[in-house]
Amino acid sequence: MFHALSDPTRRSVIARLGSGDATITELAEPFGLGLPTFLKHIKVLESSGLIASEKVGRVRTCKLQRDNLTAAQQWFDEQRALWENRYENLDNLLSTLKGKEDES
Amino acid sequence: MKAELQFDFIVDEAKSTITVKREFAAKRKLVWDCYTKSELLDRWFAPKPLTTKTSFMDFNEGGHWLYAMVEPNGTEYWGRMDYQSIQPIDHYTSLDGFCDSTGALNPDLPRSKWNVTFTDRAAHTVVETVVHYSSPEALQQVINMGMKEGLTSTLARLDELLAVLH
Image 1 (cartoon, chains in turn yellow, cyan):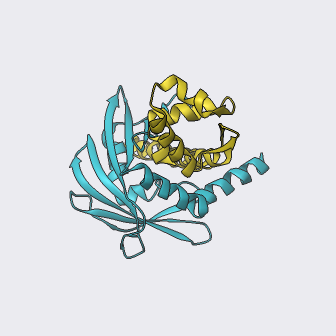
Image 2 (cartoon, one colour):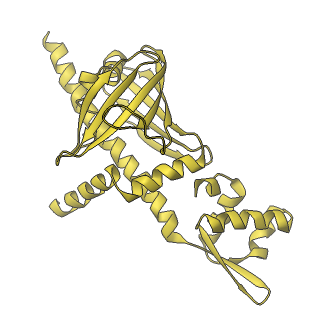
Image 3 (tube, chains in turn cyan, green):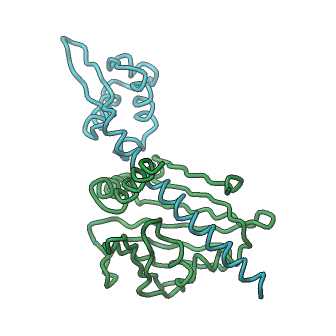
C-alpha cells in the first residue's frame, strides 16, 4: 500500500476518488499522461487494494476501497498514541529528576 | 497540564518516514541522559500499561540496547537498538529492530533507522525523532504485523478501557 501511495499521481487519484467514483477518462484528464502510463498507475492502486474498478460496456469506473485505507490510518493513530503515552512518562520522569536536583 | 509543550506527529508516505517532534520542560543534558542511560530508559520508554526491562546496554557507536516492553500479564516484546553514530548531547542515529530475548534479530521484519536530534528552546529541550523505513514495502510489512497482533492491539484495548471508565 505504501508503495502505491509513494507516487504523487497515485496520491492525487486517491484524493479525487475520495469525493466520489470516477471513470478512467475523468481520472486521467488532469495529468496529461498517455493512457498506457496512466493505466499502470491504476493497476498499482488496484493490486494494493486501495481502489477497485468495474467495466460496464466500454467505460471503466474506479472506486475507493475505504476499509484498507482505514487500516493503515488506524496503525498510524496507534503509533501516535504510543509516542504520546511514552512522552507523558518522560515528562513525569523529568519532573521527578528535576525535583531531586533542586534538593541537592 | 502539559498542553503548552509542542507535539508534532507527521507521516510522510512518499519518504516512508514518521517524524515525532516533542518539547520537554527540562535542560538538554537531563533529556539526553533519559534517552541514553538504561536505568532511566527503563522508567519511560514503554507506553503504559507496559513496562520497560533492559537486558544489555552499551551506549557507544557499534554498541546496542537490548530491551523488552512487558505487558501486565508478563508477555514480552523484545527490541534491539543498535547505535550507529553519537554526538553527545546533540544527536544520535540508531537501528531499531525486532528480536528475541537473546538479541537475535528477526530476519523477517525490517529495521527502522532512527535519527534523533536534541535542541535548546529557552530553558526547554526539543527532541525530533525521524523513524525511517527502507522502503514503502518495509513500512507496509511492519503495519501488517502490527495490525495482526502485538503491542498496538494492547494500546487499542487500553483506549477501549479508558473509554469505558470515562
